[in-house]
Each structure stands twice: as structure tokens, then as C-alpha cells.
Length: 244
Image (cartoon, rainbow, N blue to C red):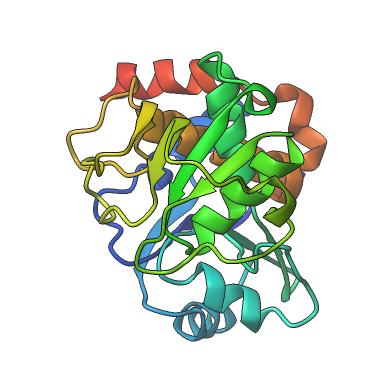
């Protein structure tokens, strides 16, 4: 594997993001160190791609709101069913992108004993992350209860798994403000927050989800040849806690 010259996070806001620490933590477990780490506060994919084009060398960038959808529409030779990318790699001046949002959510759920095929999930919102989770939840055999929000979930590959009811096993408010761990009340057995602030804990579901998404980005995009050497979600969380 060829290490990049730069890795980091792009989006807005990003002050609270643990992604720079994740790159460093996972990299060190694999013997990769001394990589320049960047945090790009950008509002759209155009700004991000301009920055990448002006920098020399390979780059690995995790993307957060609000640029996931615009990144998908900007990488014209790649598509994703949820119309969203949250990872981009520049290698030899060629761009490759991936989406690990939904799969990371599923992995974090399974780590806490929640199996999608045996559960219903209530989703508020229809942005990039909500669509990615709906996609992977339906692929895993689970049912979905949309409840509106700033943007409707709408139809997609998950439509056949949508049910009409006023309760669910799990509930997630994808309209929560980035960096805010508060969740909206829902008629659910368990509420999960996918947002976190500076007071995060490794026990927070949002943190374990981000860790899972990050590990999957190494596996499917950045360094698939190192898949078997990657640490687990729990191992990375323990390292984050020790370094906090």
C-alpha cells in the first residue's frame, strides 16, 4: 500500500470531528505515521475538488455535511444508490469515491446487539446520511418508518421496506444539528443519536458509528490490501479513550 501525503476531513462544521484522530489512530496501528492531517471547512464539493486539484500527492479525505450529495453529483463517472459519497481518494491525479455511512451504521448496530433484519427503524429526515442508512437497513432485511423532517426520505431502493405505523424499535433523527448530541422524541423503544459534540464518549453510538464508517473506508477505498490487519471498532475506541 502507498501511503498518502495528506489525509483528513472536509465539510462544515468540522471543529468537533474525531476523523483526524481516527486517521492517526488507525494509521499508527498499521505502522503508517507522519502524514499531514488537514481539516477543510468547505460548503460544497466544488471547493473541496478545487483544493484537491491544487495540491500535489495522494490524498484521503472523509466528507461530512453538507457536501456529501454535491460530491456525488460532481464525480460524474461514479454513482451510489443513495446519491451520496462520504469518502474520496485522490491517487495519481485520479479520484475515487465511496459511501460507508449506511454500512457503518449497520456495523455499529450489530456491535451493540441490534440486528436490522429483526427490527424496525424510525427515520426523521431525508438527507445523504438518512438515505444511506435507509438503503443499507433495507438491504439487511429491516423495515423503515419515515416520519418527515426538513427533507422527506422519499422513494428509493428502500421503498419496498417502508411500513406505515407510529412506532418502531429504533429511532434516529437525522435532522439533528451537526455537533449536537440531542435527539428528538420519537415513539420508539431505543433512540440512537448519530450526532456528537466536543463532550463525546466512546460509549456514544454516534462515535462507534463514525469509527465503523472510518474503518470501512480503509477496507473498501483507501487500503483494501490491509483489510485483514485493520483493528476492530472496539479496539479503535479503546485507543481513542486512552489518548483522550
